[in-house]
Image 1: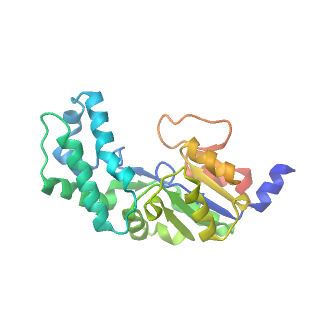
Image 2 (image 1 turned 135 degrees about the vertical axis):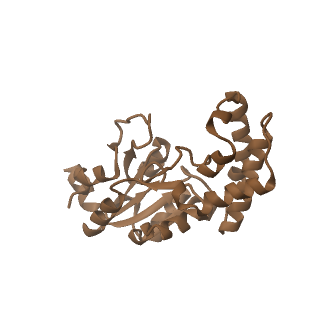
Image 3 (image 1 turned 135 degrees about the horizontal axis):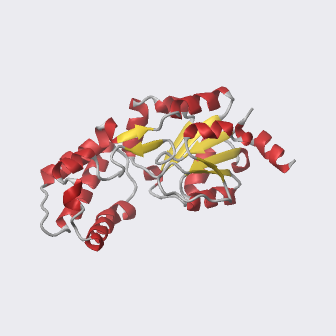
Length: 242
């Protein structure tokens, strides 16, 4: 009876993007094909792992500390800085401001860097046909809106919340509350699909129905949540069958 009442009450479904509806073409969101043109994988794989991870953390810290971004040019500048810090922190590796900007600009504008998972469009269209409102709650940057518009995925969403809009990352509940307010639905009448349990924990605490995406390799199953291995499996969950 409880499950049936939840099923009847859900009006909106919010999605994370990465490893839920989209995947990086190279398997890494930061190390794009353009990055690999200058720094092939066999070269970076020879770098001591501790040095590499420390350099990544150092480069990412400004993006964490100053996450608010309003436009693509700011994103390009900030990510160029990321690549400069990353590569200049490693021994026997060089990078110029010009190369850093080229990699950053390509990361923002090259649509081939991110692949839409098979079945995504069919899933979104079917859910729309079933009468659901659809939204996005994603840790991302302005280029995400550009990509969604250029790939025509934006047309399926009634609301899009990107973390850089507010300058905060999930699992901060303010992102969820912002999305719910923009959509105009209470948490108890919505669901959230994400690949990270810590984000689903916040969503569930607010009253949202959580679904765990297992798209990313080696993601562990979690019996606390409904789970899907591909977008289309969402359509088979009893709670979303109308």
